[in-house]
Length: 352
Ligand code: NAD
Ligand code: IPM
Ligand code: MN
Image (cartoon, rainbow, N blue to C red; front, side, top):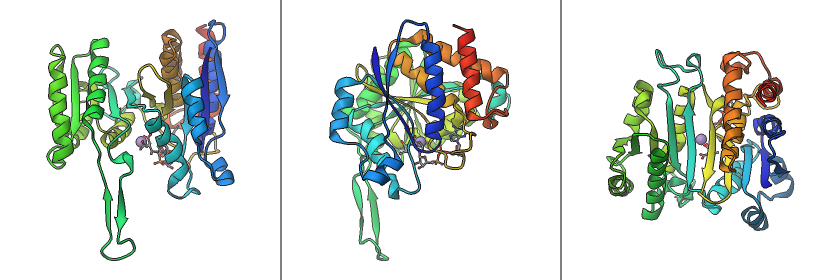
């Protein structure tokens, strides 16, 4: 039995995780596979109460005893600089060395895309976002702070090993899934050192995958072209910050953040699964958040845990609800968060 740390977190994270757990229980019911779901109370409330975000001992516990983490969202305006989110979310990505941030973009129904004349076959790509380096390493500082001469420096750190492993992961995924093109994206025309490394390594690794077409595009051009010709893109590999931005763009092409799941992965190790969206303070506590991203995220987790059939059933349940118009308001429906979760559970029970 796989052990899973469930961290609902803050804001709508709590609401959507509740629905994802309902869906998980429904899909596993009678499957012969079970999960030991352990709820972790980490988040803003606990941080504000205790001053503690997550401890070294808890990291050891995760490494030694858990196979996955299912997270809702972290972010709360009461915590200056969202320090707790940095320590927990970025902490887990970095300290567990989850170097692949896997962010699929999949359009379930043409009415959900803001793009004219595009359908499910046109919007179907995966973003491989580097997850342990880049500007997220927190190197730099504010010099002469508070003076008119203040300078803020935020270093963009890219290692040869870090760049190579994420690029290789993207090509491996393409090969394993019969995909024919990998697009690397950087800003080599302005960021010559980082871009130079990414381009050199991309070329070397691409040569090992001669059966797969490869291309390097500047990230501004790619952002434009994902809107213009999404059908061109299959696998996109990029750095941490560009991947963050492109994945919100991609999410909206496919119906919005309410439908966008992600996995933070290091093959063979514990994985962290979370929706791409945040704590959505504008929706929190109102039963308005779309739980489908969290449900699809739980599906990605099941795949990671070796249960691909149940992952497909989760996805099919989401698709069926969308087709029937059983959705929250962001997708044009009238259901609240809990009712949308119930709709998923009914579909799962019907498909059992
Ligand atoms: P957000 O993703 O929380 O919200 C952006 C927009 O998308 C809002 O209009 C929101 O209403 C909408 N939205 C988000 N989730 C939705 C859902 N499930 N259903 C329907 N609509 C949804 O981004 P933000 O407003 O920039 O950030 C809010 C907080 O969340 C910040 O503290 C931020 O740092 C944090 N954050 C956390 C994560 C994470 O935990 N992985 C990710 C992104 C942002
Ligand atoms: C995401 C979020 C995080 C990120 C924030 C909350 C630090 O936007 O998971 O996409 O930038 O990685
Ligand atoms: Mn983001």
